[in-house]
Length: 350
Image 1 (tube, helix red, strand yellow):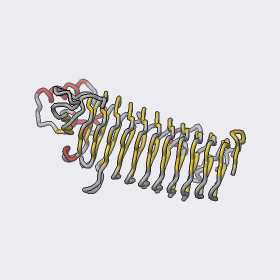
Image 2 (image 1 turned 90 degrees about the vertical axis):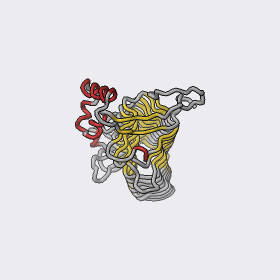
Image 3 (image 1 turned 30 degrees about the vertical axis):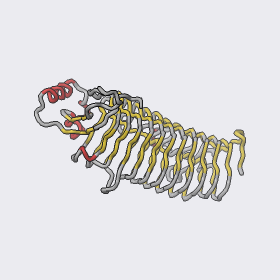
Image 4 (image 1 turned 120 degrees about the vertical axis):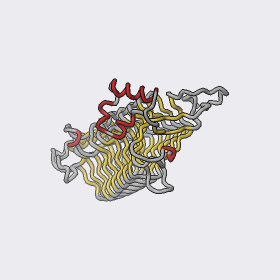
């Protein structure tokens, strides 16, 4: 056991990693570790772990290129650590937490800011909960890391939020994701992944709230349930073959564009049911809390910038707004149906 009581300082002097743990069942608690080296190749870090069943808790890691690195490690607990990278351009910092080929670890209640990424690579069956992450590039990035649980985290003012790439059977639950306003600043991004459940998340004030392509396989699915998606430029953007998504019981409020779809496909292959839409134009005459008519969204002039990305720059220009108005008033061609919610909620409260 290494117990620092919050007073013991280990200064790396700007060279290499500071603390290596190549054993199991160790406890590292209450240390201040600062001033690692600057090598990305060597992953100079505050704490480098290559062992099982260790506890890393209540440490302060500052001016460290990488914060905590786990390599081929299992059943470690990393919690309540304070992690800051070096003062450098965003892309030149290191990961706050990096898992490689590591399983069954718990990353909990850490305070992370001003780093580059939080990365799980080839690391299945991990649990990431209660962390606060801000001022970074990727809030969390899962790559070939199936069966992970991302719960109760707070991600704010990162370039992008949670990115799931080639990782199946992921649960994203009860997180707050806000102010992801980079050029690709989606709060939740799903790509080449399936059997994803994202529920009870608060997704607010992002360039794009949810960005997802279609899962692969007839039985595959991506489910978004009971999420708040609000105050974003685009609430939901789906691309590729349109299908395989389910949206149930979500609240879509004050987004400039509620839903955008890119590519070809059948809009009806996505399931929308029981969502609240603040731009719903129907009534609830029997007061059962459900709109009397379906909520339908069509693409008019919107298709110009959906299908031609370069036109996005002009999306809110007077010319495109006028063209969209004329299309709705007297369509030159049949508009595309983007979605149909047969039972829209009439009120945002249950």
